[in-house]
Length: 235
Image (cartoon, rainbow, N blue to C red; front, side, top):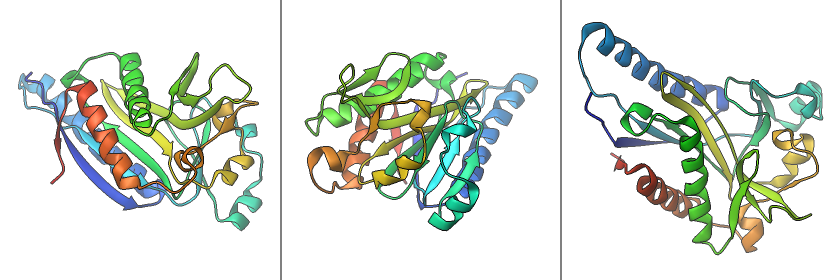
């Protein structure tokens, strides 16, 4: 099958987690169905790739390997604070999504790029690391802990970007959440990603002022494009 490295960018704006998940699942299922049809019919119709941008209203999401006790408030308290809660089918533990955060959901057919889920995760991390470097921040990975961190190996280690993905037939969904202008107080209600004793930060906090999220998205697109050798369709 001819590899299609074009990625269509779709900005969903501000949309609830449930609505966004439905959009993801539609694209995800459409790609898988085409792959099945190609195999069934002996055809080689190219599959699509998408990158969804979204900003969620306040919501805690718990991955399939997560522990509910990492949510530190009960359902009534969540309702009073206007925070939604979802158990979802991505990897990882519990995290927060909310205003001021860039959430990227790449729905890639990895048969168009490379069939290695670990390499895929490392490329997502690297795109964020390279983007933060452009803001003068020295970000890195933390051994055994998916995502992007600052000051790893010190008492000041703090996470700036969470990640959790799902893949089936080499098609991906879910993705990464980069704290840009995020209200970090929400993270006090969870054990972020199930990791005890480490802090959470944002680009705005590190730089001492609000950051243009559209500018950050453009840098992420550039860096993802370099790593995945992707072509972008923003129409």
